[in-house]
Image (cartoon, rainbow, N blue to C red; front, side, top):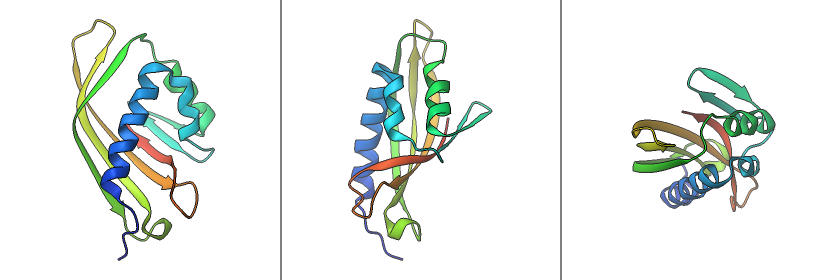
Length: 126
């Protein structure tokens, strides 16, 4: 059972980057997905980076802010030579002028290459 990645650091860096893009320009999220990525968003299942980003970009709000209260990351044993990372985030979300709501989101991150210098979102649920 080899763990070949600093999964805690990957989870921390990933969630900060993801929410920054989500809050500033959702169309830029395309760099985080590939054509085999899957998203489950409030009962909708979407596959492929173009369809996922189209779905996220079309959400009916202008302003959004995520306030994570818990970020858990763990290695995914026996996947991608011990370099895949599963990230779970719990927090509060502020949308336009609506009252804050709780949210739960999870991501399966897989390395883009053998060195695991970057990752893509293979699976995501919100």
